[in-house]
Amino acid sequence: IIDHGQHPRTFGEIDNPTFREKGHNPFCGDQLEMFIVVDDDNIITDIKFNGHGCAISMASASMLTEMVIGKKLDYIKGLVDDFNAMLVTQDISDEAKERLGKIAILEGVKQYPSRIKCATLSWHALLNACEGKGTASTE
Ligand code: FES
Image 1 (cartoon, rainbow, N blue to C red):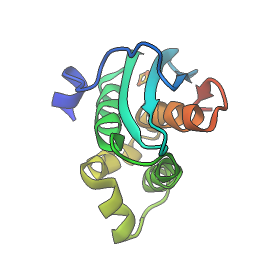
Image 2 (cartoon, rainbow, N blue to C red; image 1 turned 180 degrees about the horizontal axis):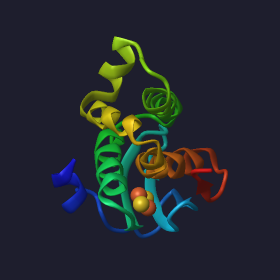
Image 3 (cartoon, rainbow, N blue to C red; image 1 turned 180 degrees about the vertical axis):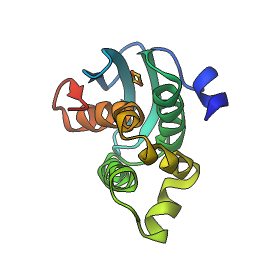
Image 4 (cartoon, protein in one colour; image 1 turned 45 degrees about the vertical axis):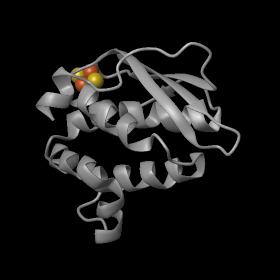
């Protein structure tokens, strides 16, 4: 988490992305913006994010963006549902944890409820971008 937070892997912008969306955490005022390129088969071929946020939000965005490259858009909704469930409920299935892969390391964030919005900031933005819903808020 610390390494991804200090050195986000996909930090930056993409010119002419297919989707571009901001995420906003009103609790702290931090914002991230996602840039997503999708091919004709609805597969994410490139993704970057920029903006500012705490180490948890940066690490979460970094791991998320790394993970979804090469995935189809319709895979994103289920992934976000799994992530939200992991942070809000006590348990998720082993299959869901397997889908989340190394991102499941963020499960410990649920012990600090005020930081859950940090972890989900980029996830809301990605989902809204893919669904064309406009700026995402963690509220
Ligand atoms: Fe702002 Fe974490 S404190 S995103």
